Image (spheres, rainbow, N blue to C red):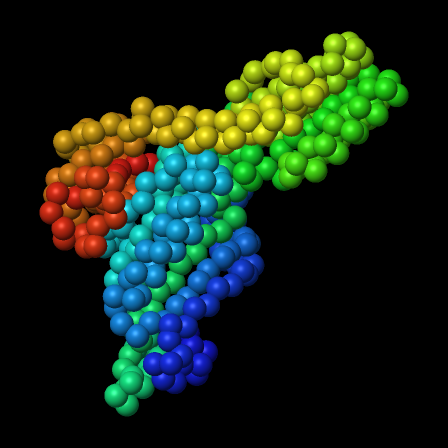
Length: 354
């Protein structure tokens, strides 16, 4: 913030947009791997604007076009976007907006936040500029950030008893080609198959190390969450086929070697959309509309609850907190992010969280 005050002199310097990746170290009484660790990788941004409207629009742009888009379309994790209540708001902010995802156990995880800081920090650090009339003005600032917590969200949101389940858009290895037997013809065809898929823009790895059992190798790739396996043995080669196994769906089909590129591409596309829809359906199934605080506490034992914000308020938040339940965010009835917590008919999303 002090540097921003030095860099900004006139309206021509605005908006000032800063982004950084940094390792952060902080004290954690009860560290949780990926979620709350003593050291973590953090992406954060800070911006300064000439007026409140521009700052607010930019904070919302980051929330929707960057964070929500990445979480939904890459991580395949559906998130509820809304604003925090005054008691949950980032200290010093005039508005905090959040992306909340449901984990496999029904708890909520705050995946990322975007803050409108108003002029509070700008006044504290004396960040001013000369406007186009030569008048000294105070800037309006925002900040926003995500961290390696998203890795934890990915694991808990999609993982199963067999290990990771990675969405194809994110997976560093989208397809693994396995040779079932130590057969020269099989291995040669596996190499050619991998090259064909790589040429098609698919991220592929080749597994022809038959010194380990096929069962052990399959288990290893399942644990790593690779979306698609192609298994090729002598009989498959003789039949002109390869076995296509989809990690997330657990399906196994024989496809023609001549059409394998299309089959793999279709499988990856279907898996990506399927993971998102499965996660969304699970969240909907475990979200209960309630009318009272007591009902919200009960529903939070299994998943999320929604109720009118006017039925909660500050007193209701304290009552929820006594049961380790919080208002994760406030939304409009249509799911959009409100401009203010004072809007009528807001919906409170209530849950236990990490």
